Image (cartoon, rainbow, N blue to C red; front, top):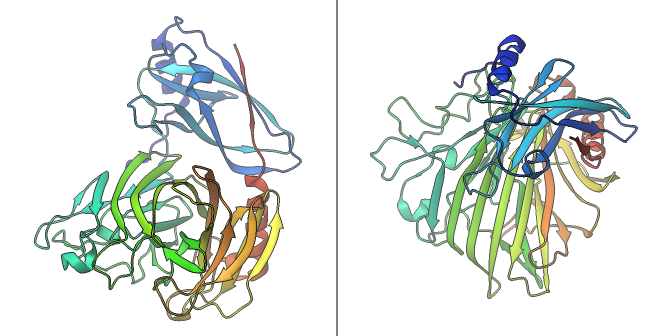
Length: 426
């Protein structure tokens, strides 16, 4: 388990004094201009706003009314220099926060509320070892290798509310870990005492378990391309031995107390006789029963539709489609867990702009058992959406009720539509 520790204010102020006064300290004004109360609102402050000359040494700390706001720095472009200060904060309606920005020599330690877990092995007899990146070639898939190379079939990411996993073995579906407690789950989920890959997460533990059936769907928040009348899955099914993607590169971009970020680069994805390049970035922060996904596709010919997937395995109730803020919410709530054991809600929150309705995946083929939200996207366009899941066994057991889950999703969509205005007072 990772260390959970919040830097006391007295130590923090002492550390601040060590930096001296050579750097001009700024004040940051964060404003919620909306009538909405914003809980666990993500705030991104670009480095060039607070360190325009690139001369600042150490780590930036945000102080509000003598308390530190938990934050972290992210190197999103991978050049070895952080370019974003990321924080999560609460805002009342129409609230303005006047923040003092300080620099300290050693990065403070805050309570860990997000995490990424990824482990792999090179042969069936080797133990799993933790890793931060991976390259997968077209013939290096589960069925071809003859063994499962990855802990939990691929990377998992979580916050204090919910967890997810991505099938890096070629399937590229998204699964759900239901959490019963806010603590980060153990690092050995998916491996046994000998370090071998083991499916030990389909049984209930104190922390929770894998709860969502995926099958041949793309899971919760996976995606595909509709070219003409043909649905093209990103990758393959479990029975296939050769991937439709020539090379997949995965990397943990950031793993911090307030934000974890994963990136996938899919090179030469063959679909309907064309080749596409896709970059996918997944981000999670505390307080939200979901994650953010951002895509950028290259090689589009103009006759494609991007499909965002919501697996509907075990769903026996009508899909709700509701607009909220800048988004359209596709919501289902039923006994969606394995063998219909638990009541849970799942949803995708997709942009209202460009939404072309939804379709249902066929019952057979490479991608099945899903609602698929349709979008016309431009070549190299950056496209973001959110995937949401909550179950009756979570700390908030009100999610057993459909109306409660529906209201949560719509409120979340409205909050995500609201931007925090950032101003720098020098």
